[in-house]
Image (tube, rainbow, N blue to C red):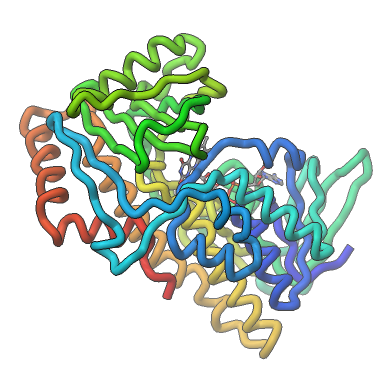
Length: 393
Ligand SMILES: Cc1cc2nc3c(=O)[nH]c(=O)nc-3n(C[C@H](O)[C@H](O)[C@H](O)COP(=O)(O)OP(=O)(O)OC[C@H]3O[C@@H](n4cnc5c(N)ncnc54)[C@H](O)[C@@H]3O)c2cc1C
């Protein structure tokens, strides 16, 4: 098999890249380890920056999102028994975010690829990448599908295979620099069959630990509590989880959290991670394969979209004019945004969570920071500008 860009991974990064390349007349093939149904049901992110939502519309994949997504013009911050709204629209000149589940985005992108003749190999085993050094004329992706070995020859490989994929570890370790912070807590998340108890997300800094009220649709709530990352989810009963959520989110003007049957629950560790550079020879990393952010800033999916937007532009310039300047600058250009998003996600995480080794001084400073952000226009505007998404260019 032969294609121009071989893509490993059918997450947001791989699917978006493939579809944008198609619209530029560039051929690609996606190799994905999981099944289509697994990907279309995997619950993950749910907040789209205004630029990510616009991008989906620009490439013709925004119809269901526009019909079903919930447009949010702000978030609520809760601390010291009060709740204050950060008004994105007023602070950013009318910008907002869209709450639309990641797996719904993936359904739209997969359908768009298949409708336009795109090739996705789901359930591929033993995926490996070869000959992607600069001097090599033809990088190759090998995989096994339905008991048959395949080899895909391409001009370039896009490593869109997430944090646990094969692409990043295939680069010689000596060529990469890793920057990492692992947080001493995780998020216990539930999906509940309950209408959201608030129109907008509520981020709560509570003495018992952080809590987040979010949603996926008008009938499904997504709720999180800070927990020990080593906790066994089976040891948390639904009653215990609801009781923590009530304790950490209620207490404001008689406001009540609406309960409902728990449809899914799990614990996710929290990590900040960046690898530099995001390219090696003819291999380009995008999305979680190159960086991870703690979910507090709702940035993982959005950062993946920002990477592939640049990567698609660089491939388009190469295939149009033969010039490699944008490909050569890919990592450097991406990393400017990556580090700003890392900073924001770390800052939100630090401001909202309880850290075990916090001194009373740290706690007072944390509450003062929330007070500043919610009472100063400059503080609120900085949060709003980052949350709705920094400009792409
Ligand atoms: C449990 C969980 C909850 C999250 N919640 C949030 C949230 O609330 N908010 C937020 O902003 N972000 C969240 N994120 C992060 C966000 O979902 C990711 O940042 C986003 O999915 C990144 O997209 P990606 O395409 O780079 O990687 P992924 O979505 O990870 O896609 C990578 C794809 O590559 C495939 N793959 C892996 N290895 C191979 C291989 N060897 N061969 C072929 N294919 C392979 C995988 O199956 C996957 O489909 C969450 C992540 C997780 C894991």
